[in-house]
Length: 439
Image (cartoon, rainbow, N blue to C red; front, side, top):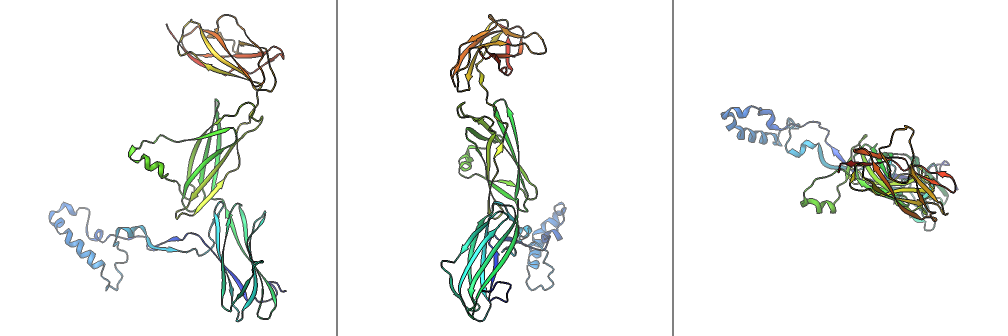
């Protein structure tokens, strides 16, 4: 059996990439309206000249459309308004592999041609896609070889491959066959191309109180516009996500149409960007949260190019602030709607045990901050509230009696929990703002 380097071969592979055609752009860069050559902007200032306008326009249109004019003096004239677009109405098939991007489907039309004067027999054809990491089989006729290809004939087939890796790719086409002399020959051919990244995704994560906000900025690196069909965030377990959009004021007449047809978002070629904002909330219970886990989820992105060529990408897991498992959580359940100056009010709180063991008993008080300033909101009555033991993953509700000594917006600061058995002080409750009014 001879290899591809041993001598001439009867067969040869020809490869053409199958993708959407492109528009043929007219090479003439600028066309003129015939009337612009004979009509000035001030023609309507003269009533006599304005009266002659229809005759002048008719004469210019007839003369510019005269097919017997061999001087081609009308080749720069605009005969129809659509001619100004510069498109001839024709589509052009791809002349080369062109730019291939991550997330697209590479589709190729492969033809193996017999250029000899005799038939070849028992052809085993293989097509493989080789990347830096792996080698994937796209076509294999080993179990059912092609019986023969006549002299001057060909055998055609189509292969597809979902592009999931960046960098150098090689389409490897091989043929094992018997030539006219009965010699077994092996033909390898290689077609190389580079896969580029069509877009970049930059993310920012911010936490406001107990709500996490994720901002995703998508930038288009291709030479064509991208129409984003879907940019969906798939949250990780125990997270929920909602996309935030600017308020849109549209009439009810088109509301049903908008629900049926969702208009894609355009990201222009050569560096166009679009920002998406998601609101994330954690809804897992204490038993299901994993300490130290900071995986928020990932983005699913689908798009189409100008002529509908699809693409799809999935980002890696987006990381947020690591979750620190606390032994206890102190929550505000209810704040009175009306708080009066120097009148006692009750703050409803809940203490939750986030561990798998019983904790307590506890004491709750208002601690003094480092500034040593006099507090505007203080405890009314006993300065320490005693709470019983709390069972594993359980909770207990209690009320803290307070009183404000000043009007306006005041802060309740330093609500601290102390475990009397383990002699442990937990982080205080974040500052809480209230409004104090007169009677």
